[in-house]
Length: 481
Image 1 (cartoon, rainbow, N blue to C red):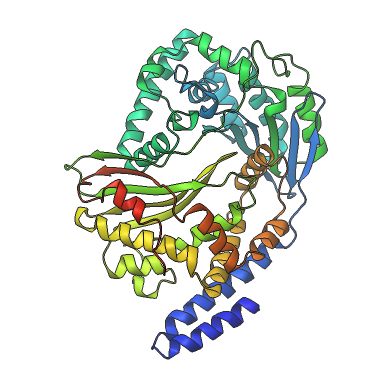
Image 2 (cartoon, rainbow, N blue to C red):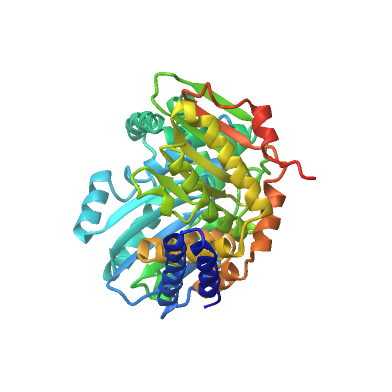
């Protein structure tokens, strides 16, 4: 109710300037988001967690539904690689579906189809995930299959050669996605000289040379019980899943916690303010990202930075008139025709992060867009208002909770949080923590991370009009008297 009253006062002030509709829409958006959050928090089941004797953690959220998602989350990704084996984690993810000691690839595919289930996996910079969506009655079979593919993958030379070609084609597809290209470049300059600078897929030379010995070495050094979480959501009984995990994952020797060599350690990744420009005048539009070092998952500033990112928002030309948008940068971008689209981002890792904006613009509008972005950065540090923060908090809370409306989304949230935080943050706690953030908190945290900081810049396309780095750096503070 307090936030609605604040928006009402804002509406009274704006009415003097003929902007009643804008204020009304802002208030309506906040109040609607608050109502949706209250509805989402109703009847949320608890997250149960059990640790097996070998260190594997089993976590579930039982909805009592007829479908379920179960998965295996492993604390291993491209950040644990070096220049010689960069790409091996993603390569291993592909090989997991090419047959095991018990099943050929064809048998594996037939079993999944007979269940009417889905089997999938992905690799990030810090995690590797294998998961299955199935009927709740088929959870035992699905977990047995997942256990088989991560323990007994058949790393045959013929399968490796076939998958090598698949990954090379995937790399070509990624290179055609300019947003992916820009973010890979952004990581490369922001974390230069550290493992976070590496791409997830790895360089072409590595993909062509990775062999079964490299894959087996990676498995032996990283797929360890203490780094594994088995998560389930939907129609999943916790005690039953614990017993299934014990029988399928706890009684085997290759998932113990002994290492053949030195125990892999997570090297700290320093942030370096710098830039990279890949000029290509054959492209019609410039794709640019500007970011500062953000906070890691467990840092107390993370949620405040998420609120600040929500304040920046996102916009593209397919949306309605920017004049009615509650976000200052969206109004400036739309009314001034500064860009085709932009989106804020807050990418978190265990001990660091990237916070900033990615935008697509006409070449001649780049300078103006950068000027407006940095002006908004400084406004967040010095003069963001209570009403804006209340709206951003409501939208962030609603968007975060409403994304958890499928078993797969909840299962992923459980697995990721247990690896990042060591526990699952319940929705009511997350809501309380977001609601406790004030405008002064936002100003203080933004001043800490943004004001007079060296940004990382990555630009691809016709970027001749992008200001030089010294000028961009000078835009990261305001001279005040």
